[in-house]
Length: 257
Image 1 (cartoon, one colour):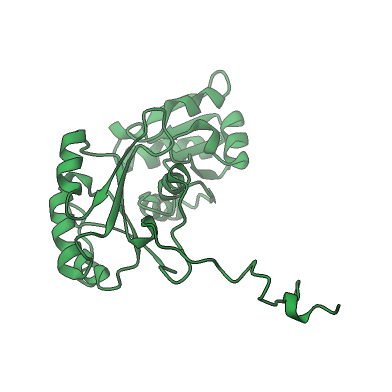
Image 2: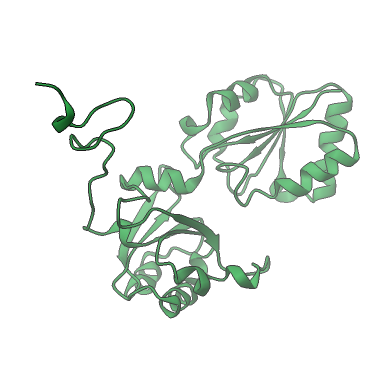
């Protein structure tokens, strides 16, 4: 019996899938892909005769059914998910169902859209003395979030934040962030379809970003990035400072003349 491979497809750009994921797509007999999110150009890597299933039209039971049938027939099955499978990928429920059937699986890491967005903007979430933490979250919707994880609570820390699946409620997001402690002039970046050919970025602050998002017509498939890491203030790290010693390098004032 063949095992199932959960593969992170990357944020959009077909070249941002990992080499391991690419190799699995090349030899897969069956690919179940998240059609509403995954770039279909990735399917060009598949061999001739591969059987494709778009999970946007499937229930959990149907997905597991295809996986189970494929595994029992010793077919190589790839479950192709957007970004990295560990973030909002709904993988746990599929893995648990496979365990019930005695079918083994393996997860292959991908590149999340929050990483793709940072690369597109040329920014770093962890700027020395500005922010050394990143909160990845979403606003509650049909899938609720625990009350202790609401945006207002997280905003208290005023650290870097990447908010998924929430741009359609941007006004509510802004209200919660300001209510929790972020200043109105805190920088915000909205990255629509990070790394795709039609990527679009809207920059602003918590004070004006809602209107800018509406003017741009962005309603889904976008990340909300919030925090002073997007601003003009920054500090150099000590890592490469000539005045800083570590096990590989002495500080300049410790070097013998």
